[in-house]
Image (cartoon, rainbow over all chains, first blue to last red; front, side, top):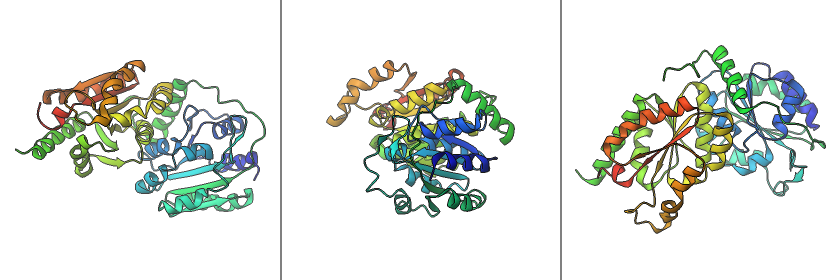
Length: 197
Length: 173
């Protein structure tokens, strides 16, 4: 599916979710479309840990926490699936954007993908709710179920490479931390920065 | 007391110190020296213990947990810590996210494992190279330093490492 159309759908339907985006196209596209600076943590400095970071956030809220990883990041740490399965957090929804390349580094091909089946890997790790989508229509039909039915989800989004370069979100690390954290303090009601030391 | 009983008593003291300073989430990967401690965290109702697949996952999980208002400890061996430089410098340094990291001080004199001697050579120089504050727990009385180490990570908004010697963990110091 077209990756921009895919992200337009995700950004339009994920209105109440807390979102963590991995380095590369996931962060770039979410920023390009939404310009959001509060409920999204652009984990642009790191590959492969978006779902673990999101899981840590999900421990403290009933809200859905969505992790968006690229497949380059996923391949760096597929063992994350076993931790996600063990945690079984009902509000953790992990989407892997499979464009079969390193999107933000000139779309250099990801060489393992012709033999790898990420959804099958998730099932083999014991994840019960695993989805795979190759069309925007198919994703759109299942998205309410993914988001509204409690339970850990792993979903693979089969997309075409973007084909152009996008800028990273122009936010410094501490600015992002405080915007995101203050948002969570407001909507979740837990002290983060103001916890007594 | 046999050695195992000593280790269990030390593990209980470390768990008490962790709970007292507000830690309720522990993510770990084993090192032989800290298996009693990991078992303690796993069975102690004051903690949610998450065994992870690799040490970097502990850094990711505990860093995210900061935004839950949850006090967290990433517990691992020295070798595992050395695999985390990327995660620490990219996540915790870039975004200034505090985190307490507990490690074993492998490779010091007294560690008979030849395959850990590289840690004796490079562990502390690597920590100095990335300017990460380091608190050594070398005697049982030092376990009380966990709390100021945790608080320091919050105050400076950076990770802090506490390193346990074999002698402390085995109840010999």
